[in-house]
Length: 112
Length: 112
Image (cartoon, rainbow over all chains, first blue to last red; front, side):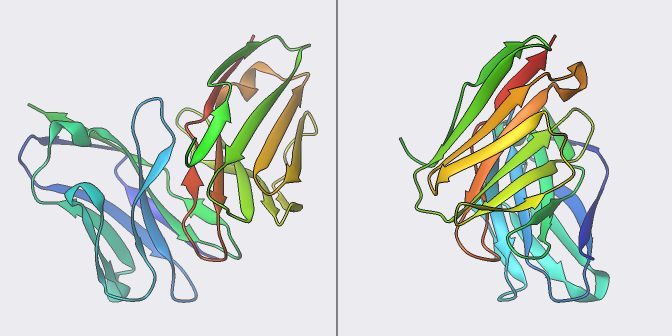
């Protein structure tokens, strides 16, 4: 069964610092993986997705994620944090037909 | 309107009321979903509709009743809810298997 684990329910970084949000997955088959972002009082917005093409996936707003099969990881990074990046981030994996399984979420806080 | 829209955005209801949440997608997708997002809990998939047929019901209490009259509209009928049903209810849509889901802004439900 596919599932995802996000390490750290809350991450705090300084403006301009590297952002690293961790996601590990368990899957018996090559997974389809996603990162979503949720700003306050809004729905989820897709940041990027991995569908077994290039292992380094670039998304919107300067975010990228690298699929590492040996580590079963799909960590999200951004070289330089901006105040507008403050939000909750969700890692997700496809399970079965048309069904996303979400991680618990990581709240990102940016310190000025 | 573009994307996925949800109405109302906020709803306060008593335990004896009957209300409905509405979702509309303007993306030509063939699958729609209801999720529940509670504080400090992962996103919970409630219902999945594919080609207007319910294909999944994740042990949701019968006080929640979904309806999908066509591929663009999805409703969630509510009756005799409990205070613990207070949450953000998110609607999403997708096209085909293994494709990303697009989310609406959600309805913030408070049950008194």
